[in-house]
Length: 49
Image (cartoon, rainbow, N blue to C red; front, top):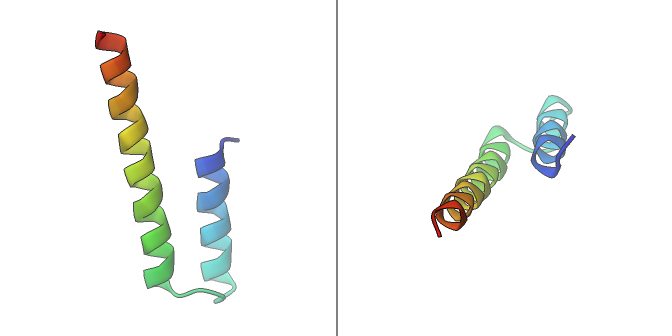
């Protein structure tokens, strides 16, 4: 399991235990999505060089 999948599962578990609210979990997911998008863009640009 990769780092993003682990972080996503941790965020879900925290919400289920009510240790963080949904807004905080959403922020974490948005950060992960942005990181994935950036990595994808970097991979694409490296492929085209």
